[in-house]
Length: 239
Length: 270
Image 1 (tube, one colour):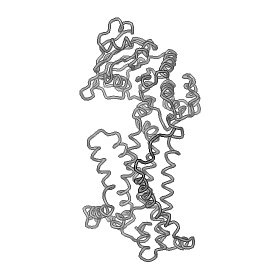
Image 2 (image 1 turned 135 degrees about the vertical axis):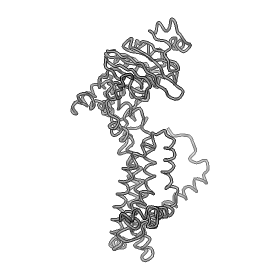
Image 3 (image 1 turned 30 degrees about the vertical axis):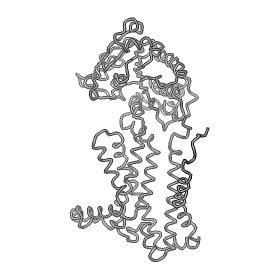
Image 4 (image 1 turned 90 degrees about the vertical axis):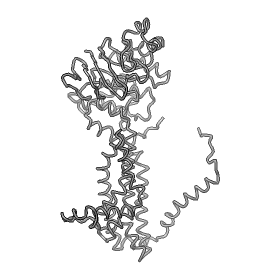
């Protein structure tokens, strides 16, 4: 199972133009603010309009501009964890996690959904939060709940938008190791946007450096370190 | 921990503020005490009371239903649209808030009255609007809808767009995502808006008087019944007012309870 994405999207003067193929289980998209990381993740999920979008996810065509195929977001089997977590504030944590189980193919029977959601929370060591509401959670707790919600439906590709950037230093280290452990169990590809070289290191990620909407360098962290192509890549690789 | 800020940097100003609060609250207290139980029972036994209460309740319920059904989609659109026309529509929606109700009444007459713009066309299909219960509802909808739309749009603006995106990635179609995520997340704000609109519709007086008249059983709502009673029987006016005060009090209670009963703030926000 793998992914491939050739995407061109325009927003005002900004143009995103990338052509990427999976090279490792976890891919880290790194780049300065406004370089197009979030737009790229949303394009993969079918959440933004693209001029060109040829996207394959898990062997299935999600989008093919030439053939005029463009699966809607809900049919792409994507797990998405946005930077703001996007938790449903009117639902408890366990109801948040159970949400997607109503829409799997076939849908999980109603009586099994909460059990499955509890299980997903347990895997991230946060089942103690199950009956609380998102408004009372800390950033690290929100992050784990959002991750559990994305993983419970067993997506073909997981997209994480700066998953650790909003957390304080201590929480970040803890959630980073939880994330690394959970992603290696997950067994399907993940794409993570980040500013922090330690994220890429902990997740053993293949690096894709994006600047101004274009890929300027790809490779392992060691390769980027040894031969950074841009000042940003150099600054990133050395932390 | 308590903040070290002073309760008021201007003690005299605070005193004036409390006088203002007294001005807001004391008249209602006086009103509540100015009717004996016997007078109250006599008042609600008067032939004016029951029809006016029934008309007030039925027309405001219809008005609020119309406002919520038509106002919710436009509030969502105002909240998410980036089109320039949305700003214009947003201003149009606020128009009735700043217009005196009497002006709204005249404007409605000029529009739907016999000699109004649409009068002849309505006449031709046998429809007369002014001085009917329908006119009462129209007047209430016009003056009250802005309160709902404003509150609902603000509530929808608070909904994290990422939550909707996540719902889509979890398999929900756009309509399902809206119904199961955006709507319930904004619900406390929508309830507050509907309560404000109901209060405004219940108190509607000027536009109704001009556009619908003051006909017992047909267009005479509680506020208009107070006007008629004041000319003949002040005690009855007081009783009618007390009923409106009680309804208003109920609404105020509901307004404060709604966010707690419906919202996610059952947990303490950190």
